Image: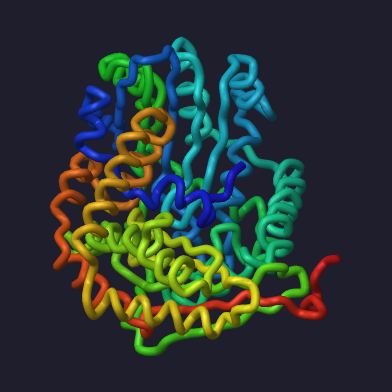
Length: 453
């Protein structure tokens, strides 16, 4: 199973929404309806190939876990593949493989999703399988305990054995003083070790229900057909009482935060900075779009402001990247990541970064930067129309974080409407170091105590 960490999110949800003109190029606007039991359904017809992507998204992620039980949402994602009474053991995955299909799942802060990609004729089969495990998952200690070991090994491989990932966790934790986004999606290792079958069953019963889910079907289908199949499968699953999502929120930041992670395994030092900013769901009208454009102007590609200033002109950086994760239920992050040129100290690189950002705050973006950024963003969305699964992910991520089909569909128009004044205002308001955490990743002579060799 895949864990939705920052790298994965960059490719999927950082783009927040799909463009109107991009979908116009694809020919059809998605249909959206709700079954009697509360299941939302989105249908994205794409008749170029006889293939369909079927995704079920649950409006629950790591930020919805009970304090002290971090990693539970991701753990349950693994356990969802352990079978039901009707389809025990590995029958689900074996059936998808026998049909020549692909399947996987991923967990993020705000959602958990499961998907299959199969020939269109097999859509009824995967819908029936997924609807069955929505309410009939069977878990025993015999399957739970070994899977906990799998998750712990995943945590070791992805995080404990990866200094850059460890730095990312530490920065995220420092950015969120009160909100559960400060917990890693995979969980803190000491808490993962204590998870039990009872924890998983309780979490499953609390959150896995049709009225807490979104079904997205993209591919060679018609809406009438999908509606019929959905009613025959998911429509038979009873709704459950689902508590509203109420999470502790962040206080207004008043102090810049900094940290250093030293590890002997680090060969290339780096600098990361996160800013706490509004998401598409929490922003004022036009604010998220301006932040999205600002992130592209700052750090997207070799024509970006930071690349030109720090790599080309000053020669203090070897690489620059950045992103804005607009698709988030609660306040989110704008991130910058830099690697120094050989011989350049991180402090000098940070000083150059601050100088370049101050220039943007004071003078704003140029008309040329604005034009290039918007053109790239819109082109990227148009290209995304060629990927059936990417389309499904765009809509699923949006609808599970408080957005609507209409906002997804009109994304291009909203980006085109962003003016230079809005970008400058976003930079002045949100690129405030009191809203930030800056992290250094550096080498060390000996690894920290407790590390596996």
